[in-house]
Length: 121
Image (tube, helix red, strand yellow):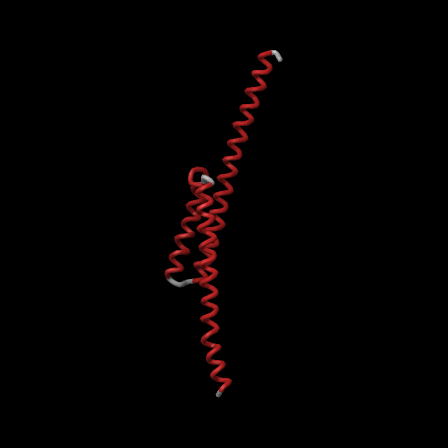
């Protein structure tokens, strides 16, 4: 009888512990995704990579909806996708900013070279 009671306790407690771990993972994934979305906004993704940022926000909304349904696995996956897409949007934004800056510098150097040649120095 004592063994049966232990088994019943374990059978009921283990799923509760697993669900709690799943929930914790979801909220950690949510925090990472929200941080990545904030960083993407800060990096100018709204202007330079709006489509990718919109995909990230769509995944974030799906993650929030899954949390409301207590669908922990779906929520974790959606938040992880949101984080990945937000990081991609931020990277694309930084890349475009760097390319623009590089083009401006190349143009300035070309202008200086032309001025030097024209001045005869």
